[in-house]
Length: 441
Image (cartoon, rainbow, N blue to C red; front, side, top):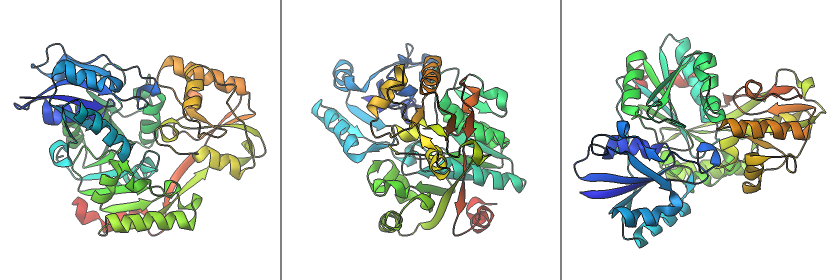
């Protein structure tokens, strides 16, 4: 029996364990490691153990979760034969640094492929993924789910896991109305809230075999709305992958985004209205080289605010989607686009930030006059609120895809920026008409 350490970040690692390793007679998972700077608010505070009630009878005390910095010690302590890499949106170079550490400690190194970990659904699956965090995949997933719903199909959106807190309690989560969102982190609300507002039932959690079964029982079609640039956990009938010309070249440089690119049926080059011709041409050339059979579509990310006069010419603090700015590496988002369009002066939160927000700004020094919407804990939300108050803007321009005003109490008015995908080559309806046979619709 091979003893395995799974290197993860509270998501794909748990899925790999549950689908590939838990019931394997040839493997025993002896530890998880938790990556710094991914999930759980970038704080490094991770659950101490994967719970016994999910781990199965071979693990009556659960499975320890230790910081990734202790990988070599975990290999030595547990006599591990194999290290499995199971998280997303990291450069190929970073993956191989972990591989080198595992090899030098005497263990084999591997990545679980989709044939092993992908689940089969009882209904058609339309998967939307990306080459990096923050490409706009949820815009596309929302548009496709909405079009399917308008045609009379019952749709269940299955989201990449964000299992913060009690993992056993979050084994299967279903969100159908606003009351189901109470108590969630900002990142969870960013991913679920707009689906729920549109009447899309959202499933997430830890145990995706049960999640997919329940979603398939409820819906005519499952839309997989991926997280970061992770591979789909459900085997897709149609695989749509987003690429971002504002980070041209990243589509071939990050794991597992390149795998998504090479596996895609359709590649959507998004945000073209904010990119140069050269950036767009670079992405298209890379797509053509890596996946010449993929259909390539071009799209804009269309940004709007309810009343431009609420932003125009004002001293504004821009708050953007947190994960896209941090481990996604984006330099700006929809809030910045809106502020610049309406000639607002963007205020710099540095020097005003407190607690964990100040730590985040120091760590991600590429951020220019904007604030990532970090709020994974009550304490972090309090830090975010205090930082906004310290900046004292005339207006807060919120580019995060949830209602920031529901979570922070500040004196300045908060203007929510909305953004949607607009295909240049087709419409959402025409796209589904073309691919109806692929989805069996």
